[in-house]
Image (cartoon, rainbow, N blue to C red):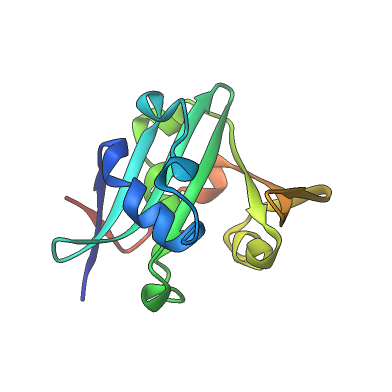
Length: 148
């Protein structure tokens, strides 16, 4: 089944963020104060939202936060293609690089996509993270997916 990507409002990301990233926490944990200023991308299978990622601008960089794909849909390239789709958008093309605080158990996902791990492991809310960074130009290739 074809996966399609499009920009969505922040409020549409909250439920999926919570379900995947912090299922035992209140919905407020997945809300970011700057959500109203970010670019939010949704991955859709038919009309079902199955993945989200949010991109926060601080040029020359963009920070990826709250990347989440439904567990039963992971391993199919949805997260990778969501990042590539976002990197191809005019807003992100103004940036030089994208970075994120990657959960340590997801570091290999980011590395396969072309991110470099920088620095040491650190903790937030009892979860281990690593800083990951990639040049926007290296992420914008043919994704084989379409927008809506």
